[in-house]
Image (cartoon, rainbow, N blue to C red; front, side):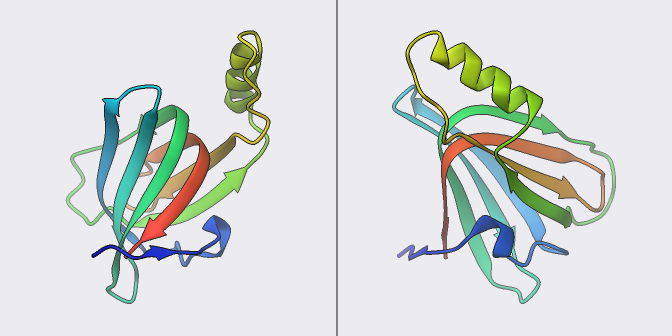
Length: 125
């Protein structure tokens, strides 16, 4: 059974962690919009990272490279042009997204970049 871990995104050992898969859950649009990443940490353990209450997802993936998709770096931010635009768009409809964050994950092997605009994040073993 999956066990939730209480972790901070910036404190995870990102460098040389391997991205195994990306999943977008839109089975219940507007009520459960999630992006999940399956990863293998440098110590060999596997986890699923789940980004909940997503308002945007950008994946600039480069394929064709024969190598594990290792992570160079990851960060979380409150400031970004696209983040500001999403907040502004929803504010017009009366929705306050001041707690919306940008989670960025940059790949080592391919130079790929994932951007997840989400209100929440958790990790499961």
